[in-house]
Length: 356
Ligand SMILES: [Zn+2]
Image (cartoon, rainbow, N blue to C red; front, side, top):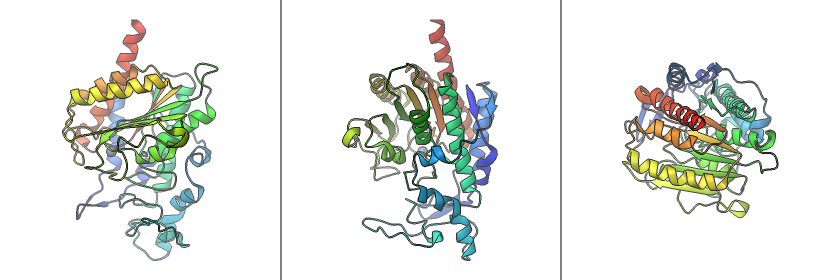
């Protein structure tokens, strides 16, 4: 399995975030990616390679051009106007019916953000751009015939909409990989539809991924996540959101209760995988978050470390060319082991299936 990683993620390093009335150290920190990289290397999962540069095309196939222009230039405009160089911090948001976009790019942050976690610092665009290129490079690995690849994306992506940053996310790396496979890859079986199943196992619902593909049937979005009545993103992620128009029936949400155990989670994951099997996608993209872990500081499931190899094995049984895209996970002491656990479980199951 190729592991795709870029040092550029370090360029995105906000210092503080606002959480329930307090300013805390930024949870989504560069150390996360370094821990993950060290763990997957120690597990001997495969060679680590830097991403190739596919340019802006794969990003613009998913995201609004004006939004990406904002991401690229907001920090410089913010500082040039005399504001705090710690980063672009939106404090007022375009809510229901408020459609005016300020002409000053420094003031567009509340228009293009859903919450206060998407702080833009001097290197945020470079980091997000490199993460997207990691995702496309991993997608190209499987398009070229590899069984699986893992993109160590940071910042993560699954909360980012077409034109909205949210939940630490700026560019939707998983959606970019999925769209690239649809646009640029030949399906593994000639004559079959070029379809993608996007399985999201982060603790949080991938509101951005849902929004991007909601009216389409060539991408099946399937997500296991905390019930939005209890957790972020709050305003999306219920079971009755099933897609619209051509996409009706191709968006499957499995909201879960507090304290979900290994057994309960794997039972739902098996149901979700049965839906993916029935869809029979050409490709599988996995939004891999491990904030489902019981010790995660911003989540409330109760998974143990032992769940992660089983999750990987379950995904391997789908027997599809698979692109893993890193999303969340904030219990830094177990983060590396849990990510490596999923990938090791996947590889072990794949190898045993070949032997049998
Ligand atoms: Zn998450």
